[in-house]
View 1 (cartoon, protein in one colour):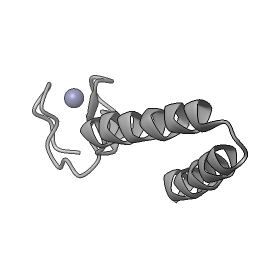
View 2: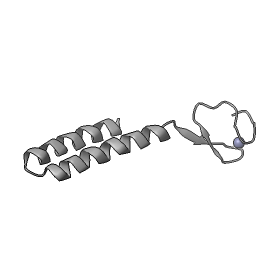
View 3: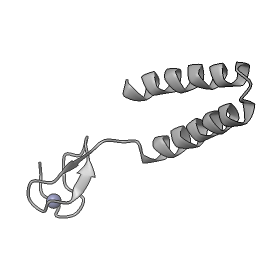
View 4: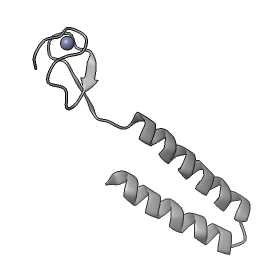
Amino acid sequence: MGKVVMAIIVTIVSLFLIRGGLPTLGIILIVAFIVGSIFGKKKSGKTKKCQYCANDIKYEAIVCQYCSRQL
Ligand SMILES: [Zn+2]
């Protein structure tokens, strides 16, 4: 949800800046947001810490991929 709010704010600010005569800054903001969202999606997938070996594992995991213990 936070990312959606950020997207809306960035879009509004960017459009405002473009209309206000600062197109370069607006375009930079839009590009920065698009790049950020792409990288954000690549990293998406919540993780949690295994209570046995303390490695970061997928949030949905039932068995730890590192120590093979059932969570
Ligand atoms: Zn583990």
